[in-house]
Length: 191
Image 1 (cartoon, rainbow, N blue to C red):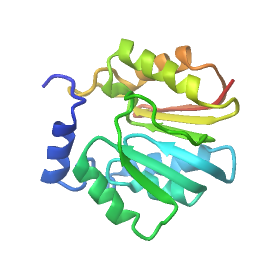
Image 2: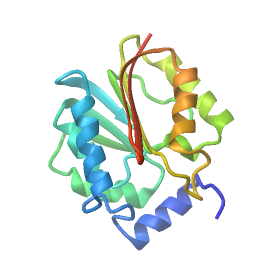
Image 3: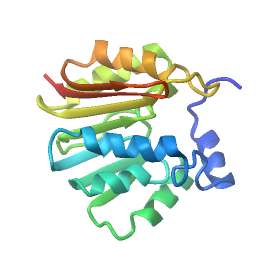
């Protein structure tokens, strides 16, 4: 299989299985969510952006720490599932939007979570996406990046390479770094 980033591929995946990555049961996914919320440096955020929210597991966890969460995905079925998971959370807004598409947000974000999304773009496109992201973020915005470190046939990059692009493109100060055999996590503050 070649690398994928098309909405139809992801929509078909979520139509075939509402939890294709086993967010509910896979120890990697449960542990990663716990790590991500634990490494956030502030106890509370005003407005978070989560591109690639899938079926909303991390969205729900972020909603506990944020006054508002804007979560996006390119797969309509994933968004349906995320809406159902977050239906009791009026401070969560879901949109169909692709990470790397033209920026459409007018409100400032003080937290951006890039969890398992950056490696779906080839390095040149990801460089452009991260440069554009940097233009739209205020100084002091927390950017949390987390990615699976193993090669996957539907990824353009592995997690280490995706993080290298993020770290070399986004003007930032690194607050925290974590890496094990499976995941790499960086917490950055924009400059």
